[in-house]
Length: 286
Image: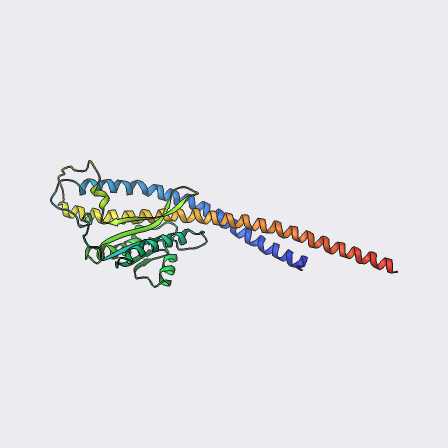
């Protein structure tokens, strides 16, 4: 039977854990607000560059950018996976990796090869463990990632697509829907088929410089912006998930402590009753 001293030690230990998880919950809540603000700040730019690229790409000119052309035969595809650098955020990364593998396995069953570009230390650890074909990786982005930190890995994937070593490029990240909902999403970056279906973009422009030079630059900026937006979106999801995970841990600690205190009182009462019985029995014997 567990002694009262052992129960008291457990209560003390869990109480210390509760203080730590409570502090981590407060820190995550503070970072969540900053991450949401950063995500909201960058969103208008991402939306506007999408409109600009759509207007220019579908206007009347002779040059059609390779990123707008769908390739007839798919031999190899690439994935950009955006994860977190740190853990303690519930099943956020686990759900993301599950979706990524399910999506990639559909192509692998058709004999299509897969390459991975990874953002976040958790993705590096996971995909290294399954011996995946990783061609680029970035980690330790911090709480406020910079576009310059992403450019090297993005260029690796774009160069591979330009050289026709990749025929499609996808990005997988967690999308921030609300404080209670964060969901993993798979979006196609290349080719940009969505721009072909937009209406109202068939207009004529006077270009300076030439359409090819302008579109080549715009397309690269567009892809970089979409990846960056996915990274800051994932950052907001990470802080929300960590805040909720730490809140659940704090609440569970409180419930365990209440159960242990009840057990402690029962053990203590049992000990007192036993001592009284021994005293009474000793007095009767005398």
